[in-house]
Image 1 (cartoon, helix red, strand yellow):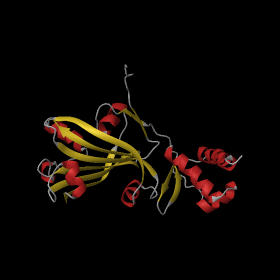
Image 2: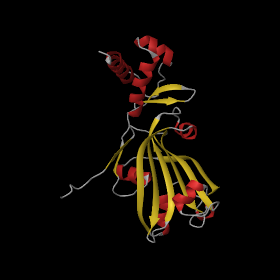
Image 3: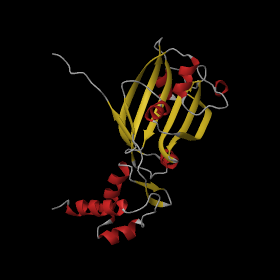
Image 4: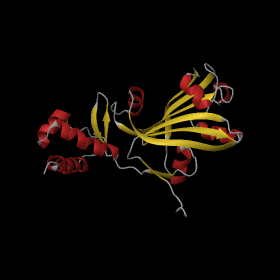
Length: 238
């Protein structure tokens, strides 16, 4: 019976979300907790579960809003593709906002990840990917300036570093990626319009060319509920 209040508030909250039109703001957390007869801690836990499903969205300083239904971006991880390519294949429209292209310098961590000298000039590309005008992913690429500088990018560059490199004809070979769950930092939370500490899917990877050189270190932060990533694996033979 210990989980009964949580189970009950999930049912009540699901009903409230279902009868609320997309874009509607839910009552404040104190008011909603009082309305549903539960503690704020229990309500917060239930709301987080609906947020990860993409049914509600919390905006810093604005409140919690009901999200309309949208098609999930579903993709396998066996082949490296940009979000734009995945969306195009699924017939979804995505856009890029908050595009930032700026110089950086290699610190101790990036020196090891990119196999460059300390202080070497780098290019940092950040952007937010949106669908239905909702931010769903925050992406960051860091590359040696000798490989990609801001001057290399065309005026109509839309943010996909991978697509640009492939279109340029770079001999890219493979990518080593790590996947985890992570709490949103202040910078990422602001970009994705979520609360600091909210759980996100986190990808960080190194892109190699055919000479075995790391040419790009990328980070991706994805709001759960908007993405289904899967891996097809063969059964091992012993």
